Length: 543
Image (cartoon, rainbow, N blue to C red; front, side, top):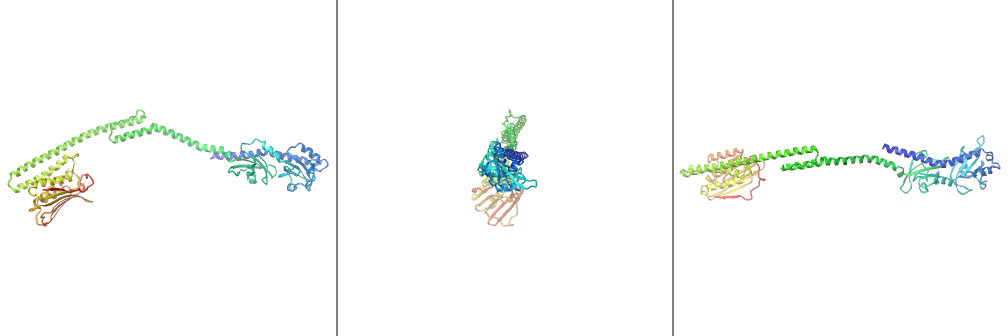
């Protein structure tokens, strides 16, 4: 901005200097005319208008090419002697003569048409006064306006510059471009412009011109120097744009160099190591970074990542081996427990076969059912992959089938329906649930249907906000409240429920059946296999 301001100031100074230079030749012409008039005013023949006045003026006119005439005017404005005889006796123009009568110095008119030569001239009059200051007439001359035009066009001007000599009325006296000069100087410039200022005007063709103007001699003739604004301030605009764009270009080049260097030395290797890290995260630890052309820092980082991947690979191998060994041991444990329980069941079965006491045989059968439930849980744990969870839907279905098979000959008309959601629970939760189910079904088969068949339903549902509900219900004979005393079966049901922090309730109506219900919190489940859904169709087991 400082540079632009300095350039504008320099342009202003150069333009003002140019108008002064352009005015120098024309001003020399008028100054020469003024000096000539002062010299003629000192001659007695001219001052007193003697008979030799005409000859004197004619001799002077011969040596001055830019003048059209010299004359002596009396106090009334009549030409009393003249270098051109045809002008003698004519009356001087009123405007310039009136100005000379009231002036003490040279008076210059605007462009006028000479009544003698009938060409364009600029008139000038120097008043003559006696010792008392009384007006006695004037000495006048006519400057050839065509001569001024010739002198102006002969000057070596800057390319595109327009120079014009014009009078106060806007008449163009001389110019090198009449069309532009007429548009710019048809109106007198501002007083500030005439005293060293600049002014901008349009030439009518959407071209903006900046010009300076100065008076030549007197206050009627002026010279103007104009240049198109685009040409005048073009170098300034170029320098300003260069000053603005050069730092931006330097920044852009520096940014490009930094970007290229960063891409080649940093970014591409960071992206490559990121891809290697993504591969390691996906478990592909055999991949090894290829960083032969990378900077030393990235080689060190790649070597560290390679060592880390090798360490993780070795640790994973050890963990997999340990997990496989643990899984094998757990599977072997469940298998042996199941086999041992089956041996116990076989012993109890032999003992029951040898006993003739019905009560003893029923007790042994009850113990067999409980042991068989434990064996089923271990069998299911042995069959699953993780060795830790059991699907309750499958457990309830097979438990029900085992109990039905045990009581089948006695209760051939009892229909059992199983409707359960798929729910995965831990082994320590599955055991109490299995024993609870066996105990409830055993009691139903023993007491609910003494004379005829019926139906039993085993359902497992999810309770929103509470947990899960396991209900075992029959439509047998039932019992009235207080009719029977709580036995070992009731106590076992409650004990099994407390083991998983559940609530057990037994509801029975005489002649309408019994419902044994266990509500346990969702914390009792290790996690559902899927979103709990109802079985598409209830599983029916018929004894």
